[in-house]
Length: 276
Image 1 (cartoon, rainbow, N blue to C red):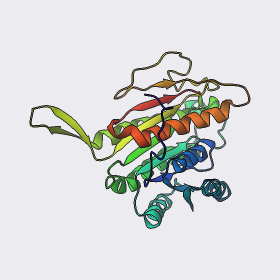
Image 2: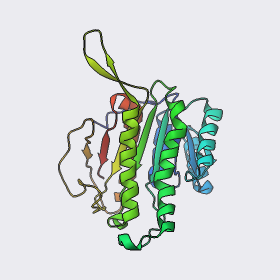
Image 3: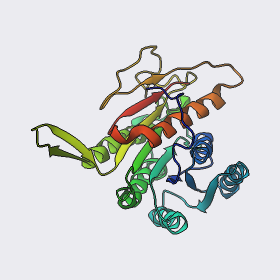
């Protein structure tokens, strides 16, 4: 699986909805999607950053629109999906990245110290938001000839022992697998061979930068590469330097996301590891 062998305009005439646009990975992904020919609807709570990303895309000749939405609120999620359909007439790609930003994490707490308020805030912003984005977008993705859900998790150093963050990240992994399973159907061919068909696909990007010594990622401190396949992933490594480490991680992640959007039609329930 080579992410560098790109052909121009891999996503021409496709429409993508990108959530949490204020984060670096989302902005980088939105710009790369547009650069590959996709029309991009960006949604998030930060209107200034969202519109800045839209302007950058348009200045480069791409097509993008911003809609103000809090994905922790179901009505906002539905409105963002509806606005995408009203503006572009279809939806082919959903990129969920709510878990790429935790906001202000409180210090790591023991199980006995976790408050209901802290639990609700993290769960709504990360896991609930991702769940309802998938739910609201799915009917339109299934109308596409290549509808795909791409969820992202990005364990952060301060989340290593943060119980709520760990639970929400794990929930997104489980959600992706469950949705992928529901979207798969077995078909018996005339030759007696059973094959899988997909009404849409759901896959996961797991970002594990070197600067993340996170116990949430079993491969974070490994130099090995896992086999690519159902339930497995590929660990991608690349050159790093002190000044460009974070930017390189954003670019690597965006490349992986665009790869799944353009070429992941036969991948279902997979995890693609990105190690910057």
